[in-house]
Length: 176
Ligand SMILES: [Zn+2]
Image (cartoon, rainbow, N blue to C red):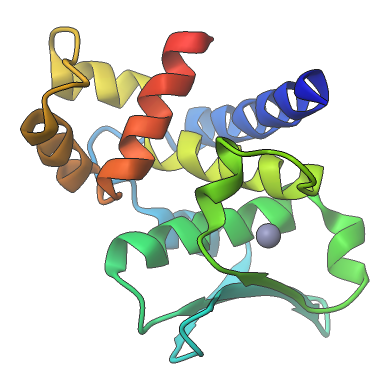
């Protein structure tokens, strides 16, 4: 199970790294909405029920990303990146119909039991795309004291992600 999850995470990271070399963002926050649009997606915010993060589907050949515009902007960014992963990596899933994402998307990075591999891939893709290693190094200058909540919160703000997402990313980077 652990290796299967690790593999899924690596797949997501690798695909995001390909996009990062293509767009080569020079500063944070990464323009995720613009990247999704450049990748051919129609990106729209809608006020959805609070337990819905977003959706990905293809309609008349058009890739569509819907995100919950009632959520915090950081979460909207993560949702857009997650749904972009489905369009980029999971073409067959997109053919099955509307893919709906519920709850907090990144939850399964740490607790992976019983989670669809594709969700792990999409979350790893999103985390990598929103928090590129090269940019983290540039902004942090020196090694980051992960115990220092203020430092983590400040960097998370620069990247337009939650402190929890940023901490997760740092943990994953140190494992790689
Ligand atoms: Zn999903």
